[in-house]
Image 1 (tube, rainbow, N blue to C red):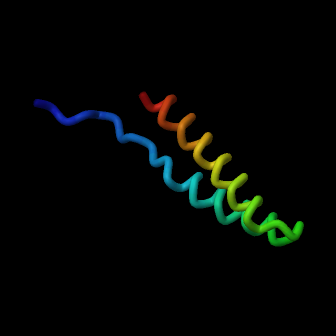
Image 2: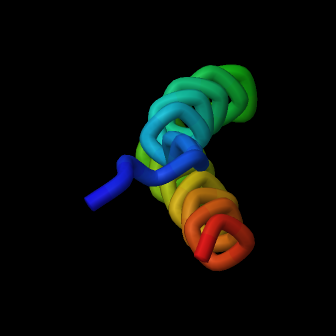
Length: 55
């Protein structure tokens, strides 16, 4: 069987950046937990979009 010519895109990077960025914004606004959760949710949505496009 021939190897797949395409390399799948990584979706973990947007999750990590979303969590860190959300925490930083949350610290600035005084709500680090809400910022973390919002950033994490945004990162997961972006990772799902990357996965869906790559399919």
